Picture 1 (cartoon, rainbow, N blue to C red):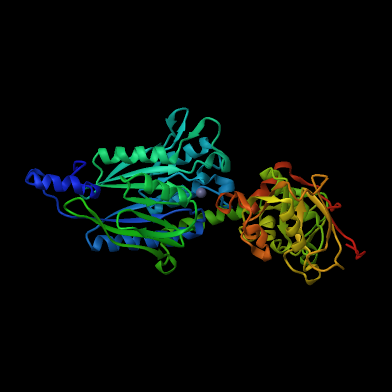
Picture 2 (cartoon, rainbow, N blue to C red; picture 1 turned 120 degrees about the horizontal axis):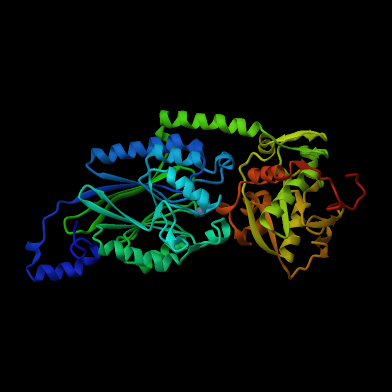
Length: 504
Ligand SMILES: [Zn+2]
């Protein structure tokens, strides 16, 4: 292992000094060493595993053919929120990750979704090294994690530190005995330690907002590369000194860096790129494992989770034009699960086009048929004025069967369709009180609408309290809500009133 000052690019000045003093001959001679890093982050969809495995294998083979060692890394968020994780708390993802062959990963916020006891169980089942440098439980690193690792690759000592977003405390469920310290203070300190311990390369494996990644790179000269996650961005960036990679989400890409550590310790990136996995084919062994898990999932989806004592209507024309019992069931569940003042769901996102009579046995498969888009529940902060604009938009194309009509919970409103679009909403009550244009309301909705889908531009500029990457899968949220009581007895009420006398 090399000493600190002779091996690092920021040691150039020191090196020049050493040269000037004629001491270089005392340093051991080293040949240039090659390393290829293959990075994936934010992957919870098991169906992507075969093509990730194939893409990683292809990059490994390419690296080997040019004499490069490899390091395969994971940037956090795999245990949740998939459909199957609702049964096995992410166990299948640990199996698939091992089959792909990750060397080292960082825990993301979603790793804490089932609580820290479950996370520690999952980590015990995993063969890869897990890092969580700024997370402690009762003062110690989580069982199955370590703050840093130094991996030997060829003649290189590759130092890796792991950092988790501090927001995990409120967007997930780590529990009261878990503390998450400042990524910046901890990251800077751990990078210094790795450098002092002789790492030839220092990698920060992070599950942080990208602004935090930039702050970390600026704050710590010791860090050579940030391998990120959490924002689902495609990033391949090198400023001549430090590099940053992030591979999007769901294994659609892998991020790859080919680098050389020169004899003088300087790190030179030969190539840094995002490789689409689409053309990589499927690893047959991993594909057959996924098939087995899909069988388990199928049996799970067919289980009865409850019965409805009232009729549920998801017919297209109804969910797009009036209050429905199903819309009430769904938005009530969204509001309960997120603790928001209001919940809103577009009629166009409810797809079953069916009427379920009282007595119907409800399965997860039925929930998935109604909500097939894998939308996630997000929470926004909206002013009363903006909420008003949102409701106006909901009824602006009321007689055109448009999917933008909203099913609602936590508020009631009346509208007059004979008025021009944009001035139809006559009155709005939130929580039983008249809407206050100046007040701030918390609003649960879908990631689709929050991103401006169905024309909801007003959502795009709203304050984000729980973002898409952190939200629960809506289908799981509703199914869990139904399963919690086993009985559905939701009826149409007086939440949405049309004032022109058209029967509803
Ligand atoms: Zn995340």
